[in-house]
Image (cartoon, rainbow, N blue to C red; front, side, top):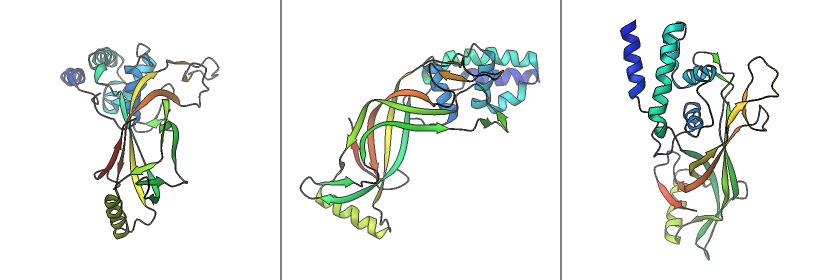
Length: 248
């Protein structure tokens, strides 16, 4: 068993988390690491660290948590690993959605967006929410369970600019594929600039107080201040056929 501990701890120290130079998926694992990267979550608290292990490395938690002495070794190695890899934790995220096109404007050479989902004054993205159950049914009490990205400046776009030739070809392909709603797929590439400190909620009455940002209720999502790097529009739901890329 001791050889197994040494091996796992060694792997833990050299393991590379999600790279910081790409746009990560907003998973609970990634978002918790982002809080740590920006100093919003303090892993010096053993209870926080234990839940961090549950969310980010379930197998490690199950392998060693029941043994007090072995788990204490793992805690030390996890803190060391975090410090070594802090710059590799996610600092950017991708948010994906779909949007419908309205009629083509021949004067402006643009497809206006449908009134049902206009891209006007967009200033927030709900990234993730969980009920707190993870790692084979374990319940998380301390780590935030909901996350929202809030933009420093809102973004507005009137529509999708395309030449008449490209617009005609797109409509033909949509018709051939049965895309009667004229749906296209949009990807927001977001960079996180700042995350406010997450700390114990002084108003929470349970023995295990939840952790929130200053002044927030326990049910309010953690806010990640962000900016839009680019907005990419795709023809297909697999985000392979790029139609247009906008940079604010």
